[in-house]
Length: 157
Image (cartoon, rainbow, N blue to C red; front, side, top):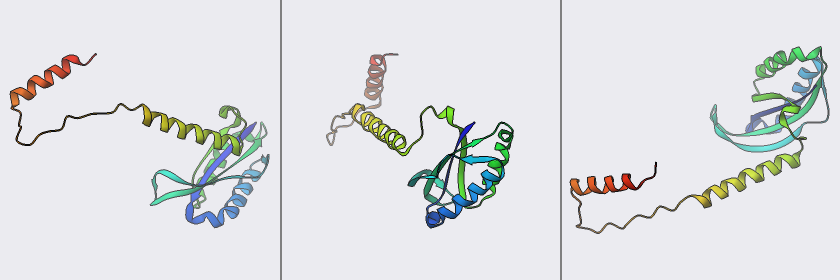
């Protein structure tokens, strides 16, 4: 069965990525994995949240296969990768769960779609207009309560 491994390491380890890839290759091959190609570098990206004070990381992925007998080694592969202190996070998924042929073009296309969705959502946000407040004009508590009641009555449920 075909699987995909995605990992990222600290941006400060960017010059050591080749060494990390060799270590991961040794782990996978020692447990019955066969690579379908080389690792593909996604590059340096900003993390969604800081991990051990790191705000950026270097991402890379590769596809590999495991025989039917070796499929039971996936937890062991994950455990050994987790023990590698240079790898911040990793994930192994079945390739058929991804739904598309993985390539750098697909990753770029997905990134473009996400950015386009962000732009659409920014454009479609309703514009909030506020009435300028004149100095010296203060509303009483009862006037505020009346206005709030009007607003709540107008709001569709």
